[in-house]
Length: 139
DNA sequence: GCCAACGTTGGC
DNA sequence: GCCAACGTTGGC
Image 1 (cartoon, rainbow, N blue to C red):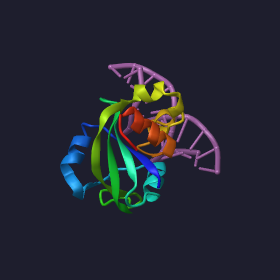
Image 2 (cartoon, rainbow, N blue to C red; image 1 turned 180 degrees about the vertical axis):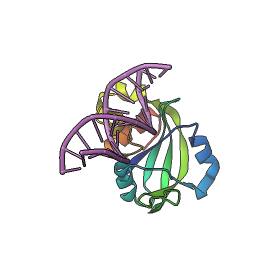
Image 3 (cartoon, rainbow, N blue to C red; image 1 turned 90 degrees about the vertical axis):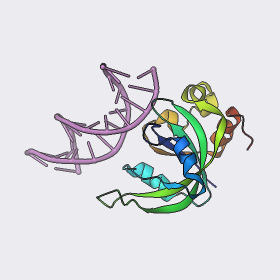
Image 4 (cartoon, rainbow, N blue to C red; image 1 turned 90 degrees about the horizontal axis):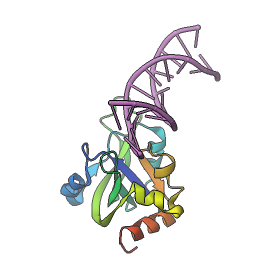
């Protein structure tokens, strides 16, 4: 069971909108980066990821679940990229900001810190637990 | 196949 | 709003 992090600008697609999409979820389209694509190709049904708001907020705000495995992204004219479907699981009790993450030495190797530009990232199990603890959530 | 130029992203 | 980091493009 692997863990992930999905990054989005809230002005483009926010966790609130993801919540409104409900149990059916939505497709995570628009990824045009091969490293991010590789992450999505590795995702299995039921795996969970953090939902991170970049730019304006810079915080992990919620948890999503993969509900459809990698398939072609119809919005990609080149046909090279695909996407997965995700649904919102729940918002975090407490948002975990980028500053919180940088202040936690055990999270110094998170991809979010090391390569903040990658839009879909892998998260290790220990990173997942630490962030969930910071958010006041049980794991 | 190299690399300079350019565009985009995202933290500050 | 600036700029560093990174990915992509295109000329050679």
